[in-house]
Structure formats: structure tokens, C-alpha cells
Length: 106
Image (tube, rainbow, N blue to C red; front, side, top):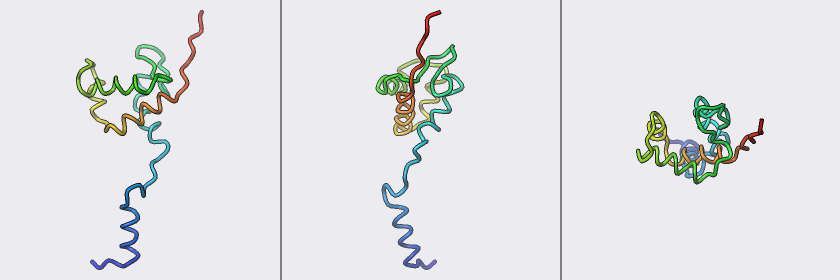
């Protein structure tokens, strides 16, 4: 196959580091998989802890502990191992940026 100058230039541009803009919704999309247990946008309806508004470093430490097996879990260790460190960072950034629901006294 003969490379034309235009095709070669396109390959260089598309293959260059940083050439692909990261999807700004990627963190939200990755975090959406957590909704079944932790509620939409991290607002749990009970049973599992809410993640919305939690400090980034706290969430990241927990996920890393699940991933390493340090923190016992029924399923979270398997889920955490399915993500790259970069993806985990995007997920915790999303949850940390969400507003925590205020608990109102009854």
C-alpha cells in the first residue's frame, strides 16, 4: 500500500499525543456505572453510602484499597480492578464535584 502525503500527514496528526481531545463527559459516563448501588450522581437512596461531595482523596484512597484487596468487599474489589488509575481519577473527580444532599431533620 502506497502512502500519500495527505494520508501520512493525517496519521501523524491523529497519532500525535494529545491529538485526541478527551470527552468532557467521560468521568460522568464512567461514574454512571456506580448508580445501581450508590444512586444517580452519587446520591444514595439508602443501603450504600453516598459518594456525592465526598473529598476526592478520600474516594480515591477507598477505591485503591478495594483494588489492592486491602479493604474487604463483596463486589467493589472486582469493580475497582476493572478501571485504570486514570479512569478511577475521572470517577472520583466527578463524584467530588457533585453537591452532597443536605440531611434535613424530621
